Image 1 (cartoon, rainbow, N blue to C red):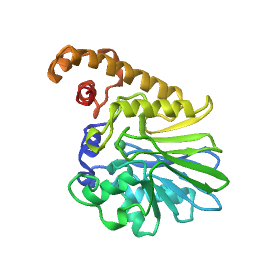
Image 2 (cartoon, helix red, strand yellow):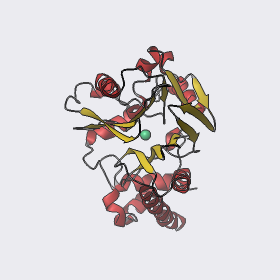
Image 3 (spheres, rainbow, N blue to C red):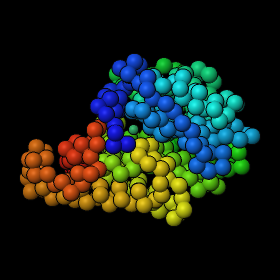
Length: 293
Ligand SMILES: [Zn+2]
């Protein structure tokens, strides 16, 4: 994931329209992480957020649908493990690298599921904050706290964590398989993007990661939106870093330092290894500063 290039920054910030010709080298792969549960990852450039696919007799459930520019490749990856059409598509959050193909799946009569706030934002502002999403892209099933699917011999618990990465985040817990897809409430080993403009918050993000850590057992498989698949220790490392970063910056802000002065003081220098193309140490510092009361 450290190989993210500037494209990642463009995509995450402003949508995917510019990517159509730039992503020809990306290939998608599937990997079975638990029985009948696959993750779909791309390599060769910025492939968007990590997707997952639950297959079985009762239906096919897709988690997130990637960047619009990759639709054909993503469909091929899905078909490589399941000949059946997708029944449900769960959206983890509003960003174009996670739900860039909603309109296509919606038009194919896939039942899109999301937190209510995600649907509201899509309807009002779209993914890119200025164009309302087309009707086909809108979730048709929404929840405010949680929703459960009982499919393929497994309970799939989809639940909300408030004001974390955005204000419409969904986490997916495959309870019988002991797998948690965190959406972007975990960028494993990297500074996270916390989308303050779409209702995310640093405090909520930390609280969300702690809640997921508490939910997970030692053996649980943690599937993050970005970064390596691992276990709950990745959650702990991230919230410990963020809590400490938050404290360091709060102290300087309390002393009366401006945002630029805090950046110049380099309070997150010891966490330099968490920096990457889109969330540099400076950007992480500014996000935390802005979000402090
Ligand atoms: Zn995101």
